[in-house]
Length: 322
Image (cartoon, rainbow, N blue to C red; front, top):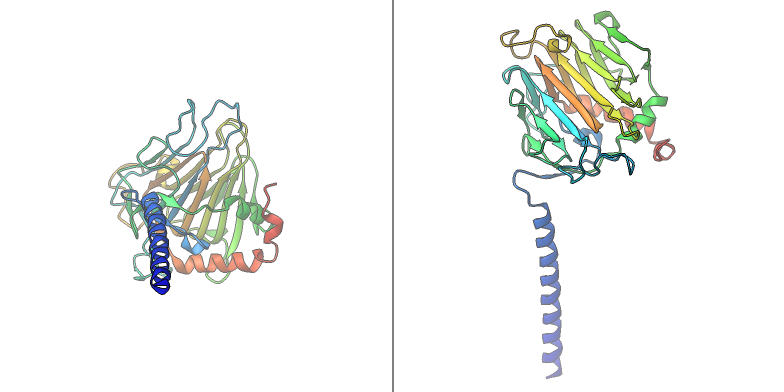
């Protein structure tokens, strides 16, 4: 009889544990069950989508601006991020893995979302123009992602840049000013300045666009003609003043006010980013006008290798904001 009672108690305990685990799993599943969303894990830079957007709303108390992501309840919230296009057949963001030597060739594996973000969907805070074609896996747009320490990377590249652009006005790099090469990835650091890449410019590596000036903001990247960037573009605003620093990334001839409108070219003949764009800001704008942003694992592997080689020995030093 004792054995029967003990067995019954053991079985009851196991059933209780099973029910508890089942409830926990169900709660976790429910927490993550959002229509049209996926929880997207990012463990390295190669896991980034074609475009990854972190929406910051961390203004100090008493600034009159709202805090938190998404809709928020505070009047005056300034979180506003837009992705604009001119023609859905010409302006494309693709998380499918494209070949580094021929952007129109798909590798067939290691595909990513077109856009991933932590900003709430279907709000005025985050807008994707209907004139931008977005494609990717597990869906074109993913609205739940792991946190990324963007500032850590920015702090590191500030001290390890091969080229720094911080002069007032507009810096222009054409074909003859191309940076890096297929086996020689470089770091370009742009601080509170405007950089224009045009003609048949080619850049390989990591381009950091950084702004820490309150007000209208000065950091801006323009890419025109057939300019191409292979690797990662990071854009970050350091804004605690209560004013908005708007980051602008303009890809295509429309950034200069020329060539805007339909019928200005054929698919794949304009600006290209082969790799990934990572944007963290409160107010940002990415404009495409005859431009492609294609995820490319080959380029991101080269970027990640650059990060590991230079960063792993000094990572602790750059963990704290400064």
